[in-house]
Image 1 (tube, one colour):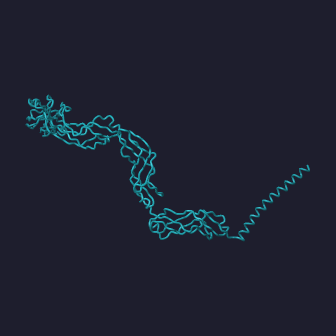
Image 2 (cartoon, helix red, strand yellow):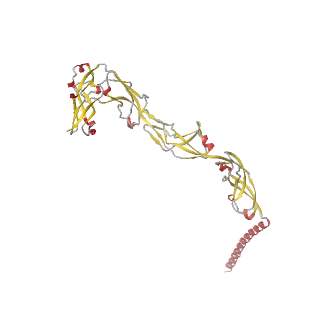
Length: 428
């Protein structure tokens, strides 16, 4: 029991002693602060990493459309002397190093004096700032639009295929920034360094990078903004194929064996390129159309090579025309007179009588000498097809319409030229 009382007394005394020590420490700090403020009211503190502010609002720089594009040293050190109670708790964020902007009217780099300002009001202080000047770059901010080339050096076409010129899907870009930097750029490209061997066209949407050039040298320019930051490149790949050329004919008489008629072509085949699905199963190509009514002995015609619409065919042979000659050395001509009694009217309107008016005319026939020798008007079929003008028949009137002439029982005989006749339509 006695031992316990001694222990409790010791602990109580110890507790009082610790409390006394804490109170003494706090009183000492307070006393130091009071003495420092009263005896040493002024203090000197060094602040580092002070931000630089270059304000051009209302200055000649702004009036000349200049902008700040660079500051040589954006973090400044200042030694500040002032009232301990005012600056003692401050940090670098409470100060700004302001650059003095005056009489700047053109682009360039300028050395500007710095002054130190406190963001808090009514604070008196003295300062020394290091460095006391900064170099500030001024320039006009401009925008310029450039065409975009596509650069895909590692993409190739499989054998038998042709890689076309790659294109950027949106072929222009607008670049904005300091005038000197923007004007230094002479061209732009979107490059993709992926490696591929293709048989079909492809659109690249990943791995594309914008590259800026000054003449032919790559240049890296900071401080620019771009109208777009993502790009797509189309790489066309076409199949190559050599195909025979075919000539088509119009106005061929019914039953005439046009496939057996011999003629000469200046070129018989060409090499083309097109998307694989367009020409993979293409066995021949009809490149021009000839009116058979114009074909006679020695006839020659030059036609521009035509490709079917929508097939996107590229002519690799670089031949744009084909000449077709008809020597017809074994053929001769004969003139036979056709009368209106030889004309058969077909597709006549039910409520009209159609009467040919043209009395007669000479028609030149071309054929082998053997077949023309015994050719008579009875071998010739002359038809007036009224359907081509039936819609314009509104009463008793005279009209002209084309007629067709054929020789059904002769293999290689046809009428040269086109013919029309006058006829009279009378209501029944």
